[in-house]
Length: 246
Image 1 (cartoon, rainbow, N blue to C red):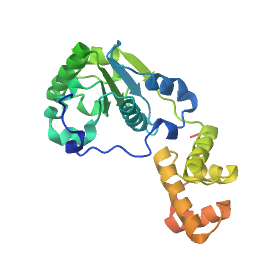
Image 2: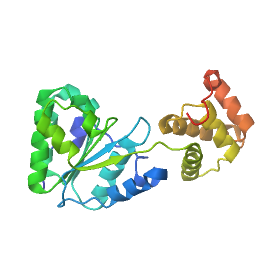
Image 3: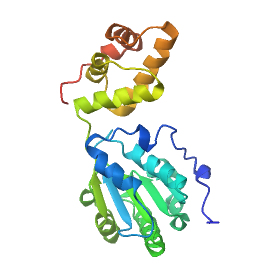
């Protein structure tokens, strides 16, 4: 049995919804396919995901962790933003697992102590032919890690750039989410949501869940009129509309 820290002791929880099946890939489908096929024992050690906010970096890291676990691999999901208060020792012991999924790597770029801890983890994984999958808003060449050797290793692996969803893909993503929850979302209603609400999937899906609950309570279909009523009640209509294509 592999002796690694108990992930639950870190206070880290994977979202139940963060699986590959609930990620609408759009133009990112080749990246999703590559992550699904990821195995320990092959090079390069590092796989680097980057993209703007709301492109699903956290979702994909957690989905990979869940999927790899189901395939019998030892995995860890380490969100650095949440672990900063624990100090660099939070990275100790994870070199024994098969795949380490690390979020928000840009959070430690200016800390030499964290850089050294991550460099040591990378070395341990490389020696055991494990994989390190990191995510950031920044491209690896823009990280400016304090430890140059670490920056070179992160930039020297596989790099995937996540693309934001287009308007039509956002509509399809919301309809896919609605289908998973067991209801239908008409095109006109989905268009209203992406026009009037923040365009990140976390906000859109959160409001979609609220609509589902409201429709069950009111026993009403998700017509544009009903959606506007729920928006008005929640204050969403007070926000400025999104510009088309923004």
